[in-house]
Length: 258
Image (cartoon, rainbow, N blue to C red; front, side, top):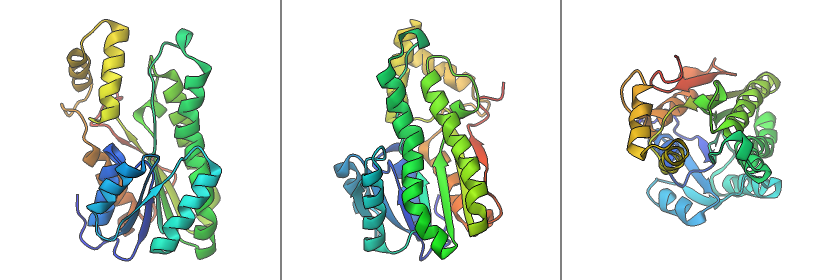
């Protein structure tokens, strides 16, 4: 979705911007006129995306490191200017039954999906507070609102993301900073393809059978695209959403309602 020059002059930082939903978000923001810092733990991936966006820069960012988060925000602002928009999109998943789940997997999901959102927000927030202006959008998940067998650790990390979003919205509201999150459903990405393979193996099905089940669970009758998510993120960053904060918006095609 392109929104013309709605975000002209705005500066945005997108984490996990090297592929999938993050790539779509970076592209949508740039299409609306923002200058985007595309960050990813894979710098080559970030560079490939940034190369196709006007005025964009690529930054390596490990969201699990406070030092890396501070450095990335500083690098983005040195290159483009003070941040107006932060999209905390970096995320990971693994799939395992609870009885087989390792502590390492639990920590991996929480380090990226929950702590990562906190650390990058913490790095960007002081500047936004000083300027009394900012928009933060976090990528949570449908899994942050419902039970998800085989993904209990992932779901818990996304529940944490939603809780952090709502708390940050209350804390930052007096500084004119809005904080929201989007909750995607079954999104067709490389991460979903891995999950299809994992789930198929764990349930004795084929990946195609799992994918067809996802579609049956989605009232709008198809798998979600990264662009479906990016469209809503873009809207949350525009003046049209200026009185929206603390929201956890479902972008699922109706999945998760039953």
